[in-house]
Image (cartoon, rainbow, N blue to C red; front, top):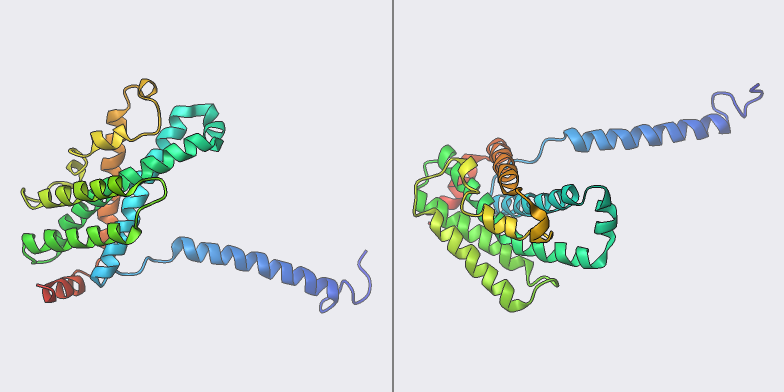
Length: 232
């Protein structure tokens, strides 16, 4: 039974419990705030570059990790704990990063063409410059050597350059010319990959459609168009 001020309102025990309660509620509220806080609007080309970069990394890394986990099944924890496999994953994700930039960059051109009156050549040129600038800011990762990194950059520049050679694609069709190269980078032996290509391509299609929707919601098209127009 609780007696005296130690357990009463205002006593030390009450203060301790109240403090713990407030801390827990506060932590939960902070988490809820983060979960439901609206992402900031994209108003400047730098914001667009950040969006392209972050989503490019997310798309390719999530696909690699989820595919490897699914293929390993019950042994996934053991597999992911092996240093040699971690190294293989690191190589895969860095080699896949420019593929992500090319795909998400093309999604960005589609959204800009849907929401602004900028000429297609301006949109493609500016988005290509943003994607390449983010690639260059990364520097050579430890998992790769400099010649390989330069080769990947050249491949990215070529893929971005091809965007302007055709009309805007449906977003679900953007992975078509890239999916095989991406699938080849999975850190699982070829003999164990099975008939998974179509599944992985479907993942890219769905994920890029989600990226398209997210960018459409966050983009302040008028502001970005105005900034891009000043640069041309």
